[in-house]
Length: 493
Image (cartoon, rainbow, N blue to C red; front, side):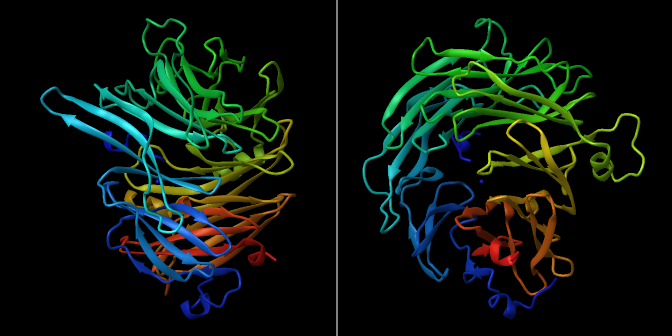
């Protein structure tokens, strides 16, 4: 846990014909000598692409540079210092390497000088150059259950850095805390304000808040999504135990508000929220009539930018037809609900429609199972435009999870998905899906793995302009890796 303090978040075609396809470009396959994982695309322009890679212990970072056609140019070591790296952040063309530091005091059983930093990186050498900026000043950590992260505002003009001590001894209840420390910076890492706030109605009482997500607005106000527990802090009881609640916190001590809308006595799960282009808050997720981990439908709440009015509130059940597809049955059970659909992506298109992609992942299994994609498109009033079920099936050891989740991208009114249908030679192939404005589905095979050593890692893909996508590929035993660019528009023309 300590090492991950403020850890940011980690048709078969012959191989010789793959390179000739107009919709895909691949780099050469590189050996993963000093690193274990591709981290993310940290910079790109019309002439080059820069990809950061980190070792398993997060102590070593390097950047691979490719030209515009993905010809490998050079690998740059980010810094020789052994720090705990959390990746890199690009703000208006300024690159910063993020890392944490700490010292373990075994005698006193505590962790000292815990801190979080940003250090400028040279655009020429991708090397750490300049003085480090303290985002979290050194403090003493008495508990190993500290968690933290950073979040960017929609316009990337503000950076929120937060951390809190979690009471993590309750099964499935993560982020259980009443107090959280918030720091908001501008995009040059100038500190704008810092506050430690207590979210509980009774500050001296037990911990009743489970922190789910945090966002920061373009104005620098922080929004915190929580579950506010009633009497029991559990998701395993046959009763509703928590009410979804939003908190709003600003620089002024008087700027502290809580919103718990009347959503009925339902089991809410897979909840998230975002800001739209006008600064309104879009709050959404799933609900069940029976228990947590199940879904009977979705909810959608739209709050105006001033937080003075709820513009829309919808609680909508899934249709019988959709439930039959998801349950793979012709006759629905007495209580028709699906279960264990995890929300992986949500994005808003130019028209203000919210697109959510989810994946069925059975709960409590040792292997990684991944099948049944559910994609929803919801209009700005909260009404469902369409819901699409896409069946895929994978079951593999858990350490291969990086190959098996899907990726979603929006381009205009089209929704694109990438996933692997198997990852071995005899059955493995990479699939791309296009869902158009009317909900019509087109499917294409990108390539097969019969002669392709490296496999697409969907969760590590990155959107590029003009309907393109930056791909990350790795071999099944992580010895080799590769980068690619997929042009969805050419693939589905």
